[in-house]
Image (cartoon, rainbow, N blue to C red):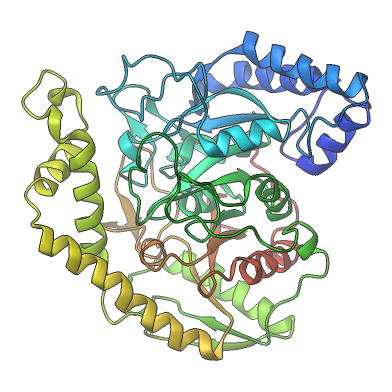
Length: 467
């Protein structure tokens, strides 16, 4: 039996496994075959363990045969982003500093919950070193390519996961987002990517989170309904996570059954500071017009934030990365670290504590701006990225000119801890996806998910990568 994970629902596949119509081993075998066929050109996976994956799939099939419930995601083959632990795999973080570490003897909280729900881990997906940039390439494993156009970037830092899903290698992966790292690759690869509110999914475990004030983990899938189904399996507090939020009272998947847009929706084409490519803006404006046709009142907001908060965000991330890599300065490993990341770590090592606190104060100030905005509108819409997906390894371009910051729309909402997602709203003339970002009020995950479900149904009628 053959499967096309680009067109088949995760929910439907799991139901077939749960009812014995399809076996977990068949799904896993299909994933492994697709990876073998395409990974040489896409480079989404950096490690595979076929034997362990088939054994785990066989265990799911044994549970089904014995009349036991294997979980809501029974038999779904997944990739795990190489920033978090999956038992039996090295967690390299895309860095020479960790390339020779022993394989993990346990799972991250997110991976443990996915496995408990019936998922089968087939391997680890690529990431830029420490997830520090929006293009998934590193010295260890090279570049991950975009399945829509192999000369282009898949985005980052969850680019390996996004490319694996968009190319149909697996239907579900883990991701994380500390500055746009789920939303950026979702936009580049034509997925519906969602960053939950900080604390919805545990980032605890034996070691403190890498970017603990900014980054949240989450499952990634092709559609928002599949993402919601996976979220239901992994949501909830964990005693090792200082930022854990209580368990939601309702199923997020079922909450999409009667999804609708709020009466008023804010649209900000630049957030007040961003430079945007004309083609990206044209496609996003067409989507906004369609949203108005659906009955929502569009309130255009020229200035959400009076200036780009990138310096405060970079202050925080550089300090975090200096904590992780600073001890390697002066060692033989240091020359094998990404040169751009080395510069950031060197800067981060000199940041005074008071400047870090001031950057955290900026997060508070940004959120106050959103509190005012969300008094009148329940959702904020923006472009997800300011350019089309750039060429792999190259800077982004806006209207043909090199762009210093083509990911300027996403990191403010990590600073404010806002739930936010990206929905594919069209294809460029070059045939690559364009995403629209959907942002909600603090802890308003459901209003974002519902809005994304409506937009996905109206604006993304089953587009799949041609690979």
